[in-house]
Length: 562
Image (cartoon, rainbow, N blue to C red):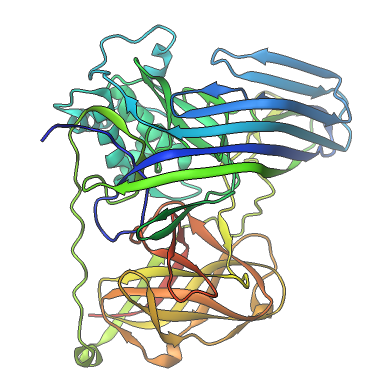
């Protein structure tokens, strides 16, 4: 039934139900941002150019960004430093060293006054749109990354938006499908919309390109935004407990959708409609992520016969001298199974409800003992960038001309939690659909230092939260973890327990002695588990009252019953 409604969406932990949430309130911050880059130019480099996109102030009905006191310092000073504005309105600074030294340092500093204001919106924009201004029409077209005219894209856009009467209804139907269809994986094999459509896998670029392709195919203008997310978490209290939002610190892609009565409105297709967090810094816009490559681009010419390329290290620091979060949540009985978050909008739309999957059927203990466990079993949130040094942020060198080469930034961001803190405990759910004899549990970890021992505790489920400890793995000395850069699997042995597990929900948590310094890698969203499946609590609490928006990377191995 069609209805006129005000919507607020945010994500709270409830199992296997529609996960649309309405959010109301605001977040405002004063952010002191500092980007530092170090370039080792390499032997044989004849000239080198660094490109920077200057972030600009931005104003929309939900998100406001004001940039103050921006400084770009380069050492040594380049021979040329020129500023230009491209056709999309991006301000680009290009610094050229004609005889580059062995090392170049760059630092960009500014203050970002960011505000996300989630009051009531009203849109009467029809669907299909009547007219689109000439200055917006470029964002309806096709590109190599956004295959608007592919028959599969066009048919999916048509089927998702048939009988729709308003632009917001069309957009929310497309995003409802995307958040359930896509699974966050980095790095994916490709970044274009068609690969994303066919595989259902990808990173932020894939989400943006697929959203843009489907919406543009439906006649809705969409532009791609590149910027930076900051790792400062924020927490919203709900009747179910605290819910904490956190992203990695680094490059990110999202979209802006044009409404004739609202203008350009930001969306993050991984999770939010009609807004993005004030932890986002907006930098560059374009038709796709092949166009929005100027920020951080390195170009150089080298002597023929030499092969050494520049090495590039980057770090981002952000302080929040002022930060206020005042948000409330209301859960809706419609929407996707994955998280989707939206402020209130008064418009006409048809709620879309996605039915939850049935829960796994339990097997009693006496029957578990009689089953034959012979089939190799592997399950978990398995995809993460193994062995990556996140200080090196650029992709491979590309040859542009005979002696001209280029490197651009990647979207590889370290998303990890410090899980051996003395103050907070973390737990991750996994759900078995078949009986399994447990052999090991692996976690995606990186050791930064310290000493001690680690183990994994397996717990039962108590009403959607970790319950009693069932069993613990063998202990593992921290000395056995690799000191190499990046994250890798660390497996904890349960094989001596002869433990048979019924289908159902179980929790894993990392235990430790001593003072180890260990991070556990996580993935945005919930690639394999339920919305409430990543929990935390203070060491002084008994109840696991907090939940996170991400999912830790883990793997469960054993033998399944035939």
